[in-house]
Image (cartoon, rainbow, N blue to C red; front, side, top):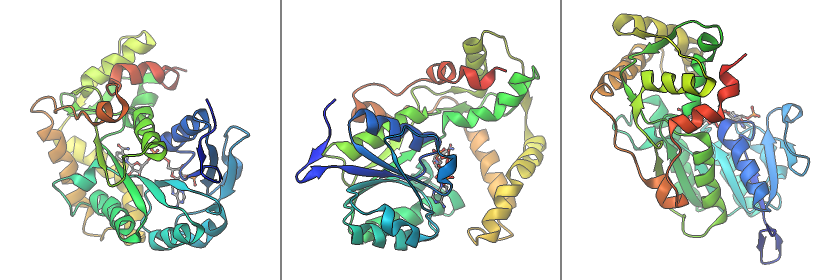
Length: 305
Ligand SMILES: NC(=O)c1ccc[n+]([C@@H]2O[C@H](COP(=O)([O-])OP(=O)(O)OC[C@H]3O[C@@H](n4cnc5c(N)ncnc54)[C@H](OP(=O)(O)O)[C@@H]3O)[C@@H](O)[C@H]2O)c1
């Protein structure tokens, strides 16, 4: 494929979060399209990217680390980090960046605008809207990679503990999020769009486990965890992250019980039946979103020893 040129030379796109599930795929897709790719990480030594990627150290919470990284960059794929966002956007503008594609979240569009995840993403969306840069907000729902949480049980042959096993999810493949993001970076016509993305199907968690079993050629057992057992497990699972958020001032020390209850409420609502499949992936890419079965096959290795 030919190099992607703008008047005056090669287009350089900077990918933040390049070690992430989505960012890593964005790097691959941009390279395939013939774009010059620059990638940032807080720990570039740990980055395992193709040699042609120009890797720089930068931290979104320290905007000054981006002054150099943005030089000569036309567009950026941005990981969501409110701390330092105004400084990062000023540095981007000063360096001549003109377009941002933000990895946001469906929570930003949700009915719980006061939930920390919504506030966390809306803070960055609003800063970008104020910045004068052009933008696309990519707002995915639940990532299919969240299912990697089940990998230890599956690998060790234990029943997979599922919170409300019969609740429905429309989990999205990280490759679809990356493809939509790459389209927005490379093609005209996506400025000002807020893309709400879901997966290609809406199935129960129990069905998701069965599909992982099918992909790895083994029937898997599940254990359905409900009610206060879910609350207790969520309290334990979320504790480190919630402590971090309290330390960073994102949530207050009295917020955690409400955050756990909101999660339980989402599970209970999702027992009602399959969610509607959002057609945005298909509208943008011209092909349907990948199904969970496809994700499970792509991730077979993550569930086998
Ligand atoms: N999981 C879900 O269901 C879901 C749903 C909707 C939206 N989201 C959103 O999607 C994002 C996660 O995406 P992902 O799974 O692709 O990421 P990930 O695999 O969790 O990786 C996070 C990436 O962000 C980078 N990063 C983190 N803090 C940074 C900082 N201060 N400065 C610079 N880079 C930083 C990390 O880079 P280095 O460590 O190399 O610096 C890493 O590459 C989150 O914003 C999340 O809220 C997730």
